[in-house]
Length: 120
DNA sequence: TGCCTGACGGAAC
DNA sequence: AGTTCCGCCAGGC
Image (cartoon, rainbow, N blue to C red; front, side):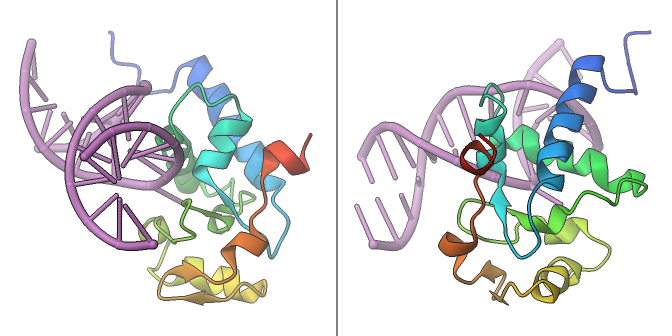
């Protein structure tokens, strides 16, 4: 039995850390996978942050995680296909006043919320 | 068992 | 300044 379907404790902690940070992102603001990774110590790639996000999605009980506020470093909605509908992410953002055009957050630089700065 | 891919990012060219 | 390559680590086939 070496195939743990359940995440290891270490991974679970990682998930929770990521989710916790995402929950702290204020409405109308956005952050990035890399920023979160950096805030948590950058020990793992930003890719792992995205991976952690997937782990939050399905549970759905965890909907408290505003995943739509996390985009990639270019302000692109790279994770939109993981939402219920391809447009759900953009709609959620626009509902908070974030303008999105062509899958790209407008004024991304101004709306960017960096946990390692805001949360210190 | 091994190769490819991926909610990424930064360095190299 | 735009494009390509490589590293990160886990999962799928």
